[in-house]
Length: 170
Image 1 (tube, rainbow, N blue to C red):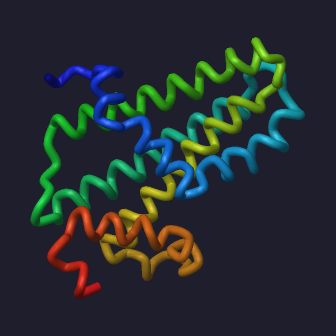
Image 2 (tube, rainbow, N blue to C red):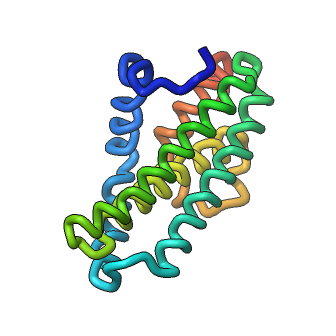
Image 3 (spheres, rainbow, N blue to C red):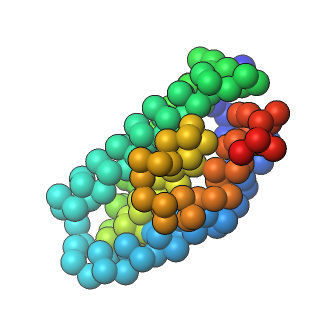
């Protein structure tokens, strides 16, 4: 039961939900915005690739920390090891997709376009989730307001998910 199964994830709509979220929160747009200038420069892995993977890992960490705090404060949802394992598997698959996109860039001779597109999209998606967590935790006062205007819908979704009885109070 605790093992990752792609067929089960597809049946439960996890992949479709992820793609829908990436479309709704403009992750694809962020990926494209970074990919356009990047593909011109490199046709093989460079330090830029490592830096982007490092930024992605850092956003995973930020999202994980704030998500864990949010789950612990929630009266309805408690963090379980099963959810933690699922998150690790998801993040591993994202890193694998980004690393595989380097090979796709080689095959399609697209320089670093595919890598930059996917990596930037996943960075934005996780940063978007991190900001939603921060806002739902009430820490928005420590960050610029314009950031939270971008993630207003994500913030409301997190509040609804973790604090369903308090949605009318906020």
